[in-house]
Length: 352
Image (cartoon, rainbow, N blue to C red; front, side, top):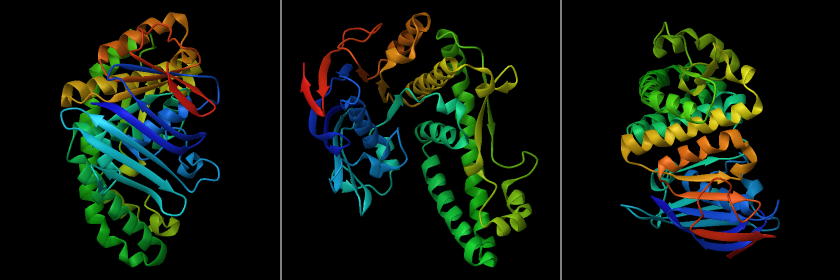
C-alpha cells in the first residue's frame, strides 16, 4: 500500500498544501522550521489519528484556525480515501471511504504507516506506554482478532475505573470481561513477539547494534491468572480508584547483558536499536500478513554516523516499501535518487 495523494489544511505552519507522492521514494527538503516534518505528521495522522510528535493534537492546529483537515488517497489491492479532521471544540473525527470511522483502529488498517524520527530513542528510554503502543500496532495487523479484544477490554476497563471512583461495589461485575479479554490480549502480544524475534536479531546485526533481548512483562504476576490478580488487587484498587493490574500495565523489556537497555546504551545506540525494532516490525508484517506500510523517515542523515549508515540504508532497501523522507538538503546521503522531490519553505510546498 502507498499514499498517493496528501492534502493538508491548517496544520502547524502549513495553511494549505497538496502533494502527489511516489510509491517508491519521495524526498521533502527544506530548512529548519520550514514545515517538512509537519507534512510527515499529516501523513501519520491519516494512519493513526494522532501525531508522532505530541499527544496534544490541538497543538497541531495552525494558529488562529478553528480546525485542521488532512485527506489522503491510498493505493493498493484495496484502495481507500481517508480523511481526518481535528476541531478545537469537537476533537478528532475520521472518515474512511466517505463513512465515519467507528474507531481510530479503522485508520490503522486503511493506511498502515510507521515512522523513524529523531525522538525514536524514547522507545528505549521512556516508560512502557510508548512500547505498548508500538507493539500493539503490529499485533493489530498480525493478529486480526486483537482489535476486537482490545476494544472490549478498554470498555470494561473504563467502566471498572468509573465504578471504583463512584460506586466500588459495582466494579466487580466488570472483572470477568477484563480477565477474559485481557488474557487474549496478552497471548496475542506474546505470539507476535515470538514471531518478531528472528527479524529483530538479524536486523540488530545488520545495523551493528549490541545484541539485545526482548521480554514481555504482562502487567500482572506470571504466577496468577488475570482473574485472580484482579481479585487480589481489589482492595488496593478501591483505595487508589484505578485498576492496577492487566495488559494496560504491560511492558516490553529491552535488555543488554541482562541490564535495561536505557542504562547501558548511548543515545546513538538507543536510536539505532529502536530503529532496528521498527524495521524488524515492518519485515514481520510484510512476511506474515503481506502488509507493507509506508515508512516516514524524518531527517535520517542527522541520526546516523558514516559507520552505521550503510547497514541502516541496506535494511530499509530490503523492505521495498514506500518511503517519505525529509532532509535539510535536496539529497539523501546513502539512499538512491528519490523518484519525486518537493521543497518546503515557510509552510509553502512546491515540486522540484
